[in-house]
Image (tube, rainbow, N blue to C red; front, side, top):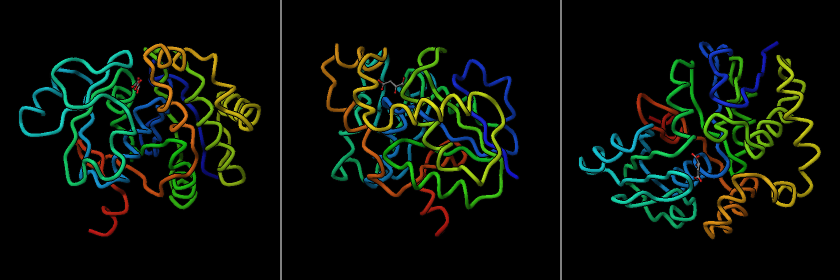
Length: 240
Ligand code: MLT
């Protein structure tokens, strides 16, 4: 039986098997939610980079520059990290260079995987159905916050684990912990997360709408997948 595991922070990734696995990157608030909305609204590709300088130099080469640090957009970029900015095909056909505090770093650290896909509540069922249909073991990598575990990513990991029940064997206790948390919080995740650190951080920056939007389930039937150095729509990849 295939195995599923959950890595609660990229700081622990060295303890997990990544090769020969499908890695699901999770950064609910807000990087992977952004990536999902962007690809669902026609963005051609997203180049995730860990450093601001890398993002700036891609911007100078013609990409749209999207950057976030500590929830804010640093000077000299075109976009911050709000998923709402990509709605209504606002950046359809464009290439986005993206750097965020945690999400893009988690991608950079997972590049040895068989395949890297992006998960969020916005495309939850699409991700679960894809994982069930594909042959490999799975590792869910939570981006966390600067190396620390966060609740929102752990809840999403639990939601995926619940969806994979019966198809995958549980590997470590982090899998059970995340599923237990999700089952406890799922009836009202917004209320459950109201005291969590990044929700408070974003609220202090008057970024309430993004929080509510990122907790909506199954708004888009797309899966961003890493192809060489860019995230693209898996569907388009299959068709080419
Ligand atoms: C991150 O990468 O840490 C997040 O996406 C931060 C944010 O967008 O607020």
